[in-house]
Length: 353
Picture 1: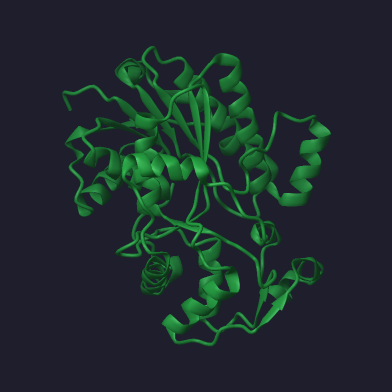
Picture 2 (picture 1 turned 120 degrees about the vertical axis):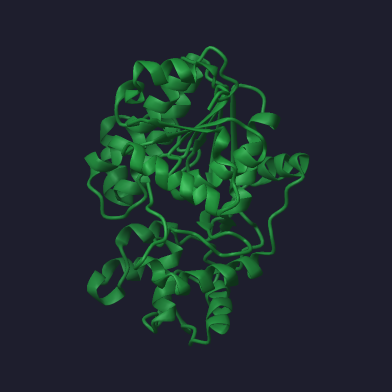
């Protein structure tokens, strides 16, 4: 490719990263896709982009490792990326049941390495860091004993994302890195095709519903597990550098019209032609029951909350960018259909990051 990249996407082969890369290319950006695993992963990404109508001629693939300082870039790739203005960090390990060290390598150390590298760019306009709607505003770095308690309470995934969020915001403030933190809710498939490629979190609940293994719901009648379609999130993220100014911005990106969890599951049960659970069991009780009985990973219970989230800044940016959430009911139904078609990831169509 003859054109220097103006954008880098870390985690470009992951669920969010690949849809973001496709959106950026559609907007005419010259994109460097940071991938781990060498040319094979880059080839998979190019094939996926072409299959989804993207012109990959403006794409450069660079081999990186976010868990290492400087992203383990070769000297030639480091020189090539000196033209980058916007850095999007969608690299993370999203999995329940991890050990603390494994989670921290990607979600804390990796986040800091991307932020430091972005801060070294001579033309940096914006670092856009993906955090999470239950993670954002975790506060400044804490004493070690407080993080120890957080890891015990929430598990390695959420605690590492909270720690990484706090560390990146602290670093950006100290080194004056222009930062936007995007806090998406549960990300579901494409609003039209339903395609996702990620089968944990809420998708696991849908699978249990489909297979007749969901006799009751954990939570309450007001439990709110908001969603956002991956294509809306990609469009929103791509628009951030064009609209955000100032040193420190944060946006909670979710569809506030998402039904409360019992209604959401009822909607999907009717669509799939299966029985919806009638009983709702308080989370506190579920925590005390054996996992073999509940079928739930204890880490997932932290997401079952009645909390609501301030989306004012995200809504304002979306309006300025001419964006609107697609109808959430239609998107949920399309996603559920695609989950069933894909066998809930038993035969994934694209390797996740």
